[in-house]
Image (tube, rainbow, N blue to C red; front, side):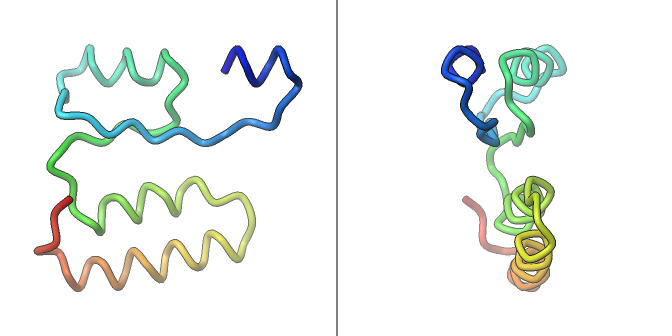
Length: 79
């Protein structure tokens, strides 16, 4: 986030994917600038749902929702 600010760059969405899922880990991730914290193992549906929340325009949002729905149908896929 500091690099973005110093160089007047647009905000880059950050998804933290980690094995750490204690409340203090989630807080640390968000404090460090992550937009979303996901704990492993994560299903494809959960990942795509998280990514769809980051979409800024309607097309990206709709595509993310469609992908999340497809991934939900394949919930057995774990990343």
